[in-house]
Amino acid sequence: MKQQVDHHKIAPKALKGMFELEKYVANCNLEPSLLELVKLRVSQINGCEYCIEMHTRDARNAGETRQRIEGLGVWRETNFFTKREQAALAWVEALAFIYNTDVSDGVFEQVRNTFSDQEIVALTTASNAVNSWNRLAISFSKISGYYNSEGELKI
Image (cartoon, rainbow, N blue to C red; front, side):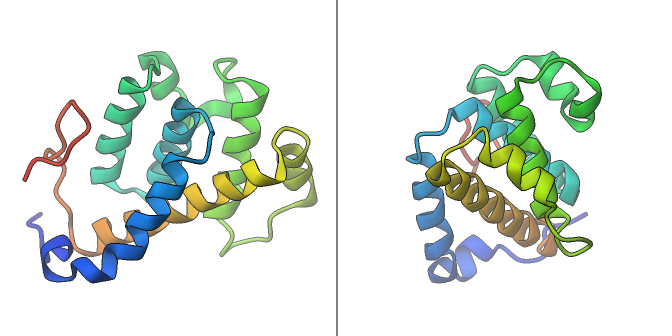
């Protein structure tokens, strides 16, 4: 598929708020590897090829193993993830599917028992940000293969 619109070049001001969200997430004191797992899992759910490539590489750069990355889609069936990671993944999955069902009290209690309120806001912000990036990339047919191993866009 050919990229339809280069939204970065056409409307950089429209993305200003998105980049501010990214700054907040990058400085929220959650573990970088956890944030990349969250971003990768949400991108998998949304089916964003470009973002899956990006966050797989970023997760590897943050120290994630191939086994954990490959097992992320079935994280509930593995023993690769800590209780903290499981709570975060359950939370962001519930948020990704919020259009279909409410976030259950059980999922909220799981995240609440594991994370501080500030960390829950950070996880939610990270989830919302990657959901928005996924929708931009999918809407405008962002092509994979343009993200280098150092975690930078190849332009």
